[in-house]
Structure formats: C-alpha cells, structure tokens
Length: 360
Ligand SMILES: *Cc1c(COP(=O)(O)O)cnc(C)c1O
Image (cartoon, rainbow, N blue to C red; front, side, top):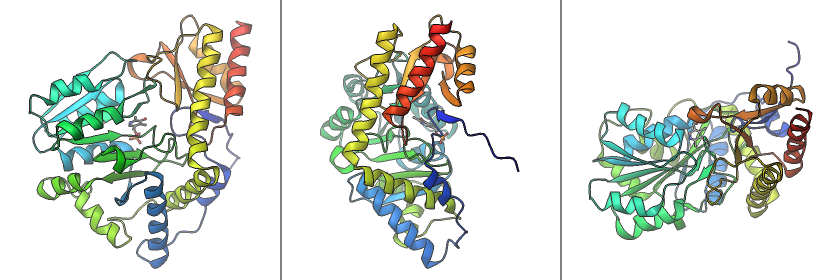
C-alpha cells in the first residue's frame, strides 16, 4: 500500500489526530467482554466525568453524533420538543424529531445569529413543551449559543423541561460543567475537539432525563439510555464497541489533562481571537454575530474570493480548509481550530491564505 498523503485538516471534523493517538488505533484487538476492556471502559468514562465536572455516569456509544441526537429525543421527549436553530445542525435535530414521529416545533434565527433565552422563555411559557434542544457550537455558522443562560432560565422557571445539548464541536474545547449548568443530556462525537478518528459518541444524562427515559416506551433497542446505564454499571457496552476508538480516546484525554484544561480552553479562545483579528486586518467579514462566536472555528464570508481557487491553493500547501456548509456553502469558508491544532498552526494557515489573497 503506498503511504497516504497527509494533508493537515483545518476542517470542523474529523480534525487532525495526534500521531500518538493514531498509534493507539493500531493496537491489537481485545475482547470487549473481558476484564481488560472493562478496565479501559471505566478509565475512559472516569476521565470524561472529570472533563465534564459531573457526578453522573458518562456513556460511550458506537456510532456518529447524529445517532445520540436521535437517542436524546427518543429518551426525553414525552410531549413536545422545542428546537432552537441558528444553523444546519439545529435544523437537522428538528428533522430527526419529525422523522421519529415526535411532536416538535422549531424557533429559528437567521444563520449567523444566536438564539436567546428570552425567546425560549416565550415559547416554554405556553406549557406545550417538555424538552428543549439546542446546539452549543453551531458548526455550520460558527455561532456559540448562550447555553448557560438558557439552562439557567429553564432550571429556574420550567423544572419539568429537559435541556438537550448538542455539544459536538464544543466538548473538549470549552468548559461544560454538566451538573453546575443543570443540563439534562449533553453529547459529542470524538472526531471534533477530542481529535480522534470518528466512531464514538460521548454523552451523559441527568437523573431527570433518566427518570423520563425509564418511563418512555418505543425508544428503540440501540438508543435506550436505560440499557446504557445498565451496561455502564458493569463497565460494559450494550453491543460490540469501536474498541480502537476507546484506545484513541483514552490517549487523547491524557493529552488534554497533560496540557491542563484551563490551558486547553484558553488555547481555543486564543486561536479564535487570532483568526478574527487577522480577518479584521484583511477586511474579511465574520459570518457569525461577533458577540456569539464559537472558539472552535472561524466562519468567514468569502466576498470576492474565488473559493475553489483558495481551497486548491491550500491543498497545494498540504492543508484542507473547511468549506461552507449547507446554505452558506458558496458564500463562506471555515477555518477550524480545535483539538490538537495549535496557535502556530493557525498562524501558518493564515499566512497561506494571505499568500493566496496577495497573489490574486
Ligand atoms: C459534526 C456535527 C454533528 C454531526 O456529527 P456526526 O458525527 O457526523 O453525526 C452534529 N452537530 C454538530 C454541532 C456538529 O458539529
């Protein structure tokens, strides 16, 4: 087999994987019903609980994040779900609800804007909803949702409403103290800020969410949180897990803790600032409202830039830049800076973009 060309990924998932993490993927298989796997499972779950500052069990599901977006609805929506959308992934979550035959409404703001707690309050005051679903870091637009404010409002005024959070491009890059925030379900795929090859979803459910799940029927076999809870107590998974990804995730979590979580979060904030300051100097317009910017990627309006040529130039430098997503596909590009990406890497990428812009 010829060696694969390594183009460095500055796309919002999958992200660059550390060579040490990649090596873990080549470890010999172990049986998933043996003591060795249970030890690995418990170690990884404990590290994740530490990351999320939670007393709750943290579960691991084999699949992609969308699977647990669906699972969260199957386990937590008894009456009607309120979906907050400010981009493609919030819209998708609503579509998933409808595809399961659930009652669901969507409150959308323009792409690039953020949903706010006030509109959540207005919608929940109708008393129609028992869950609200929100995307923490809307990867399609680069918007960071005010999840702590929304969660505070719900916990104070609507104790029976569950807060479901897609933290796919947020977890591991921003601090998400689950218990303190009072979130009910939080989920993330490991191919974004965890910087692992795709295949596992990290998620946790509050006691409130588990109580709802225990009551609900027709959750599906693979998506039942109660099964995850039972398996977790045994240090097991309900079916054959992506064992290689467990090895990888264990290693990538060690990298996070070795760097120190405050330093990790600060690094992401710095990379975002660096990119935005560069864009301002270059006269490029940020796509998201500057008051609501996710630290994990910078989404910019392309304006007069020929995107095909820009992406081709970047590829010639061994770099894959993020394209626009969904309806912003042809009008934006995204510089993802999450996971193992360092500020110096971002500076390098920005310099290559400069090179292209100056040669135009
Ligand atoms: C990537 C992403 C998803 C989808 O994840 P999959 O692993 O492809 O299912 C969902 N939500 C957000 C915010 C994402 O960034």
